[in-house]
Length: 207
Image (cartoon, rainbow, N blue to C red; front, top):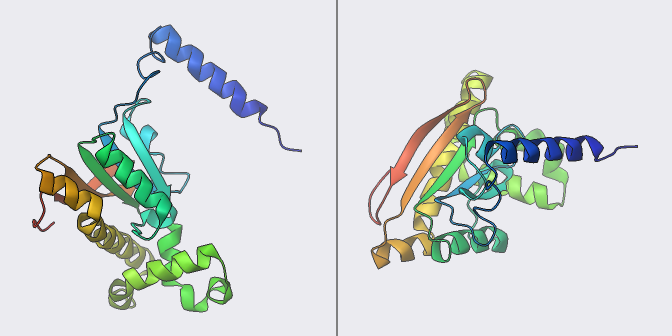
C-alpha cells in the first residue's frame, strides 16, 4: 500500500528550512502573487520549472502539458495564458521543451505505436503533435535516433513558439503597447542547462 508520509515529511522539512533562513518567507506572497514570468513546459517529471530556474514561490506562473504544446482550442491552456497576461501582467512567457521528450518520441513513432489505434485524449494530443512537426519528422528520417529526436524537440519548440506568438492574448498585449517578451527554450537533461532557440518582443518580429 502506498503512503503519502514520505512526501509530507519532506514538505515539513523544506518548510522548516525556509523559515529558519527567512522567518517571513511564506508571508511575502500570502495575500497576492506577482510572478514575473509564465512558464509553458512539458509535464515530464525531470523538468520542474521552479527547480531548474532556481525560482521561489510566487515568481513563476506555470502551465505544463504533454510536449509543451500551445493549443488555442484548449480552455485550460487559454485560461492560463489569459490570466497570466491580462491579470497577473507577467513580463515574459517562456516556452520550454526538453531533449529526450517522450511526447515528441511518441509522435515520431505514432504510425507503428499502439496509440495509433486508441480513442483517447492522449492519442488525440499525440496525433496533433505529430501534425505540427510533420516536416521535421520527414527531414529526420535518415538521422541517428538521438540526433533525430533532439532535432524534433527543437522543431516542436519552434512550432509551438510560432503558435504562441500568433495567439490572441499575446497579440492583444503587444497591440496595447505593454512590453512582453516571448522565449522559446530547450532544456538539456544531461547538463541541466537551458538554451534559447527563439525570442520575440513585439508583434511582427520574426524569431
